Image 1 (cartoon, one colour):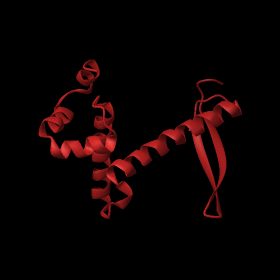
Image 2 (tube, rainbow, N blue to C red):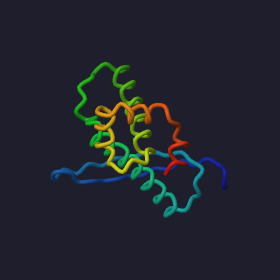
Image 3 (cartoon, helix red, strand yellow):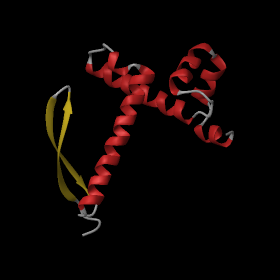
Image 4 (cartoon, rainbow, N blue to C red):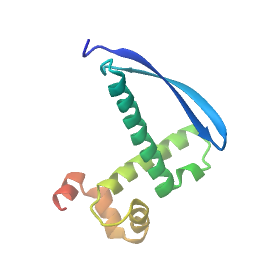
Amino acid sequence: MEGHEHDRQVESQREVDGKIARETRFYIGSIATDVACFARAVRDHWGVENELHWSLDVAFREDDCRVREPAARENLAVLRHIALTRLKNDNTKLGIKNKRLKTGWDERYLTKLLFRSTRCQAQNR
């Protein structure tokens, strides 16, 4: 059945501050029916998601943003993702938060991030 879509259901449970939360998630995908393989794929997916959200919160304080208008929130989220990608692909030996600060202090660095292609940056490593 490889190459065909499969419906999957995952039930998860976690404890936060003594409270147990249960959640059911549904997935559609072409991954094989092997339970171990599917479970690994789900954990990998959430690992990437959690790392992205952690990075956005630490470097951009995204959780502290008080913008409430839906279109503005969405636009800011897109800009943060673009900025995070540019910062991660830059070869400067600083953490993401410090790279972000450097863009505000150093116009040449900001120009480098905005206008140099990531391919050029990778070649200059």
